[in-house]
Image: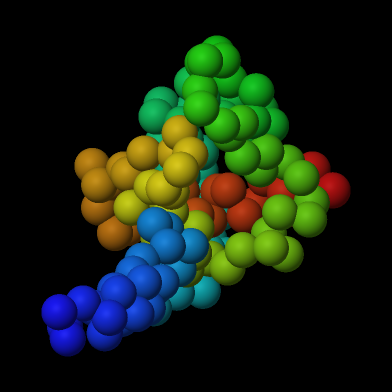
Length: 129
């Protein structure tokens, strides 16, 4: 019985860091030159239209064809959106998904493709505002 109380206290503390997708669980080096690349944004746009638009919408406004999702998809046209998230966090959400939402993990994309998507998504808000 002596182990029960410490386990009861330490288990929530151990699980506290497992927030299901708000920050990378591994180091991510942000390729700033790739994010600024017109070519990367275009590749990201093509990937987005092929794989993401169904939920997030063809205009990236969060209004896709799929309407029966457990949560509303992110509106990437909101100019304040990039102020609330970092490029590394966007990368992580694409790769790992976001717990408690309809955002699934997209590990079919390699690292370069994921950064291309990040570049495109960040550019959408800049062009919308």
